[in-house]
Image (tube, rainbow over all chains, first blue to last red; front, top):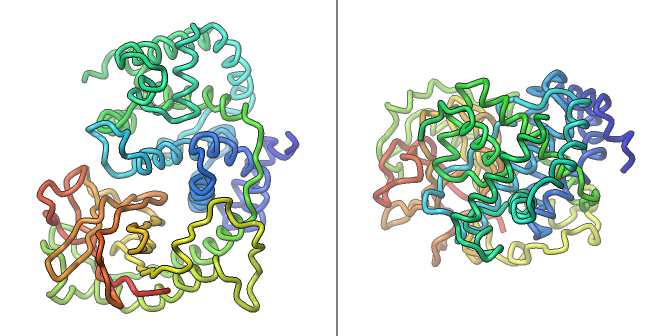
Length: 188
Length: 265
């Protein structure tokens, strides 16, 4: 996919037209973004049939909710990826119930993307992304690994502990310190 | 947990977006964020920054069947939101307090039933249409099928149902696959949140209501189907329950909607 296809201005226009019920714009939006969302869903869900289901859900949601998206709310691809990732987390909770925490089992949560909040603007977003990779390098190995595993695999603290063969408390602290360090670096 | 500590709030926002904040803590944090702009800003900060990790992945082209399904779905979605069933539905507190398996439903539910046969027919057409190309419809290339199709659905019995929440656009398309022991629910429309509750789906049997699980109010979900269910038609009901579902194993709150699931295949 060319970066021109995912050009934020074009995507903002396509989202606006999709929100007005324009199916052709929706098709173009799908064409421009679906492969990015699908890559994330495949990575997180591992199973192709789950990723298929999640991608379809996401775009159905985008079709229904595109009119709540406003350009000043931020970068469209980030908004779409956020919708997809929360959807994948929900699916993992539902489909891997054996790994849930005791307090799990509630209805699928509303995500903040649903509430119409999104990041600032494309320029800030791109800068933030570049900086993220820089800041990731600053993390200690275990911190970095736990954050990345949680992000890409959707692991809970318990799953991280199992995967990393470390006590739960230690893993929680790796995640927290990793995020805290990231926050400090991203703020600089 | 106290949230007035800015540092703690930052961490919770980070763990919320990362996904390691789970269960009730996640729900509590969502409530906090819905009332607090600073928390929402913190969430947006992390959503923006962490999306860089997703953008890192090499794009993967999805199978064409997904778009074909979407085309069919959005063709159905728009008309249903343009012509909602307008009924003078009672407030939730006035709704029946038992699953409506024997007593006739009040007028709003009756009107839902009236529309159900047509809706179910459309659902059936979609279910069949997505798997078996019919003459005159866009063919679904065999090669485009997902790598791991759901083989049970071709040969097995499937019941379908469309349950609508009165006085809202909220509805669920349900497909019951007894042989696969599962019930799939796809939510659409706007859920008029009725306080802090869960919605629980029930199968009404001769022995009384049997819980199938919690219904999602967004996206889709899969629930477990009890074994040994047969017949040409099943009856499903949705009740309002405490968060996490009925504590007794029987419906404890009002029944919000109910209707038949019709044998489709």
